[in-house]
Image (tube, rainbow, N blue to C red; front, side, top):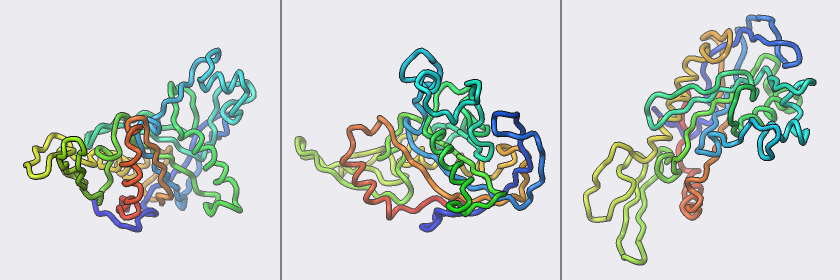
Length: 276
């Protein structure tokens, strides 16, 4: 796909016409036709931390969400008056798709923001709650009454930022091993394998630098190209806007802080994906 340096905000099309729910869960059973609706899309990328390591079940076990809510009485916005999980905000749609590399993905979540029926959660619940509040505060949010939010998470665990998730435009670099004095070439975007000794011929493998990044972005585009499948009552006439990105890496790169700092410094020069 074409990449544009200023593509942080891109527009497309889709229209939610209605939604269903019940009392005490912030949802209505009314169906409306909103041909002028615009959906604000927030892309969630990353690795294991973004994937979601938070355990939900276990009311008697410290460290679970259920224990935090029911025993410690935290996060009251997640439950109704009877203590049952409820829809946090019926204007925030939560979609999570997961796949390896550039292959097809599996849909794990497609619902209004809630934790009911979920074994593990990621940061999307907290992010969605805060964005939902922002959406409802007309003075701070430029959204308007007819706009909803789509949290679109596309990620998988056990992927490195300096290899699997290397974004387009990332250059290669060389590193000299102080012990062996060998000079290694580390792959730039779309190079393979991840490294080889300078002066030797690289032997490509069935994976390239940035392959997971490309797959995650591609699966996001697949969702955005078929929003009626993911938002109840949507049609192809509704407008959408990619309004922001969240990225959270995980345990895979815990010993790679020097490399991560280099990559982050270079990030301002790396093109953002275009969703037009």
